[in-house]
Length: 191
Image (tube, rainbow, N blue to C red; front, side, top):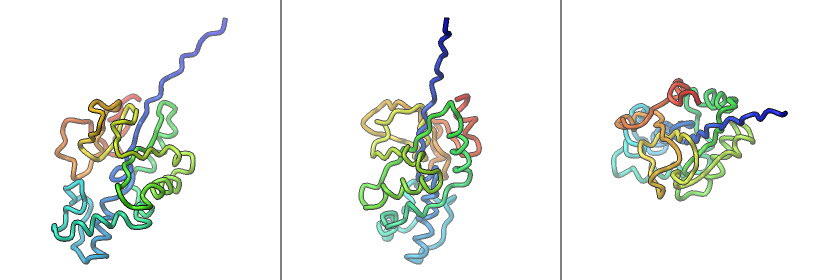
């Protein structure tokens, strides 16, 4: 008699891109200096989720529009440890890893550049695991790793547990799990 082998359920991990995998904040700050002569800031000084708010109100709209430029998303640098940690996640047979990112409401290249960025750093196969949505609460997963301290949408009880990716602008959040790329295994536990 043939014994049935029990198939282990994988944990579905959804990972946001900007501020989690890519250094969106530092790119915005650097462009604001080079384009508008604004004072230099480091990402560690950005205490607002909306990066442009670090600058005076009269230039915030111009700074915000920098992210709509051609090659903005494709030129983002990976956050330290992100490539290695995600590569390790991808090799774990207990994990089903996806990228779940919100594209800009306007702009012509954000969607394709996010895909191309993933392909550049992880290859075609993982780039095809990109979910672009304006409402992450509709996406199924066990965990959503996101730098936004509050992820809301039409689904008031998302399928996933929110894990806040540590950034200076979300440190006021104390109600959720918090992680960075050096402690992801401990935070996600025995996946």
